[in-house]
Amino acid sequence: MVKIKQCPIDRSFHHTVLHKKWTLTILRDMMRGFSHFSDYLKTSPGLSGKVLSERLKDMEAEGLIIKNVVSTTPLEIEYGLTEKGLDMQNVLFYFSMFGAKYYPGDVFVSGEFDFEGSADTFGDGFLIPKEELDRIKKPIINKTEN
Image (cartoon, rainbow, N blue to C red):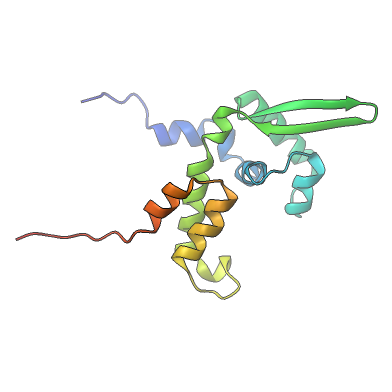
């Protein structure tokens, strides 16, 4: 048995930039293909430019994203995910599915959870491979044998 020094969930979440407000939203948007500062402000009306700037710096320092200066005149910067940032893909997908299942009134216009529709929608947004989506959409049957 492996001896655990610290809970990996606690380490991954509470001791990194991931626990800070807006970080997961910004990562989600990067996974959807956004790369410019203004893109993140448009999709998150409550996000201020100051906080966005702080989160992007924190995420770059954490190794989740990379900052690329495309041109200096005029200044154009693009942000992209590193391998570490891309590894958050499945985590965010399953967070999305959790929220959709347990809070459908807040998530969906219809107020109803549609498992397959949600898996397709969120899976596409996070570029989850089709084989993984097909596996997820298969009903899980727990059988108990006597």
